[in-house]
Length: 152
Image 1 (cartoon, rainbow, N blue to C red):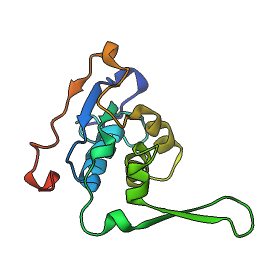
Image 2: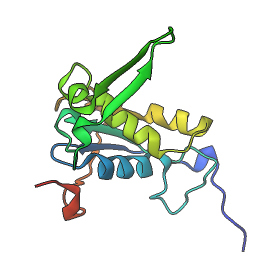
Image 3: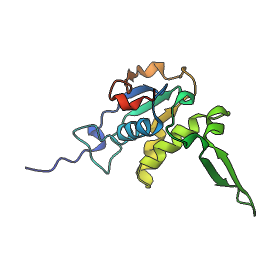
Image 4: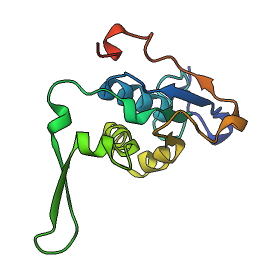
């Protein structure tokens, strides 16, 4: 028996839409990261980009448990004394709430070139509208997968 190793010709990519309204951020990010890598497929090959194209809508309505909304997020401008911070709640209510979901998914992927290429297959939108209707994406109902995926 030979070990199967997928080639780029064997890869079949799908388009998936996930509605993040009311879903816990960490659980959403782990499901999206699994879909981006392609680990849900039986022909998963770690060295190939096997994953699907994932569209996340309603990123501004994602839920956080505990005191994670008050957790500061730091970045540095590159200038002396240029450390800045913003809480997760400020980012979610600001101009770019999709960055919270993008960062959570990015941190669940490995730190290598393949993961950076797989992140280009992720599209996150704050509202319900997205410009990818022509790809006829399938809807993945994350809420019904597990009762812990939603916060009540």
